[in-house]
Length: 149
Image (cartoon, rainbow, N blue to C red; front, side, top):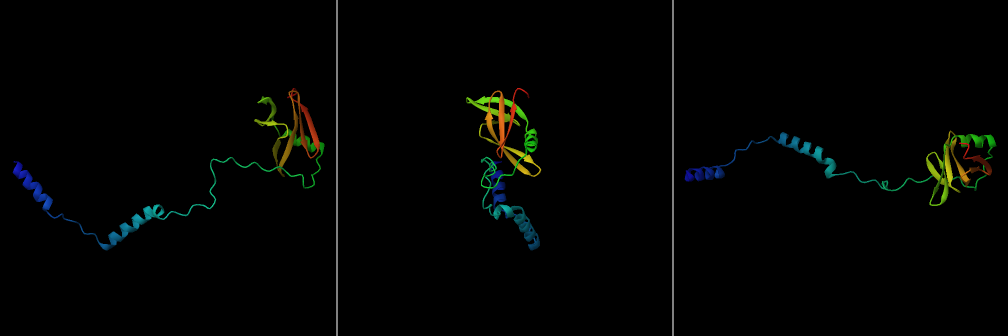
């Protein structure tokens, strides 16, 4: 039995394998299909010159410089700009008083961006305390108490 099995395995190993011959058109089609599937892997497009850094914080818009002549602001216009803000309250962070506006804390001297149809206006938080806050725009001041809100 062992001899028969060995003979059979030896005969199969030495027997030429029957192949199906492919036509040149079929080979060409298969090569084109492989190139189509692996084309981007073999020849990737060049990387962008300046890729964005996904770990960098977005840039903060620069405030309006005082080099240009300031646009005169009427008191009513300033009140309208301030009314677009949502004053949430007062908080102390690291013993520094902050005013919470639209859910974000701002300390004295910070600029607050207010989007308007004509563009973005920047208000400066001039003073903040437990009882009141003062916002400034082009030399005009808006004062309000926190207890009234």
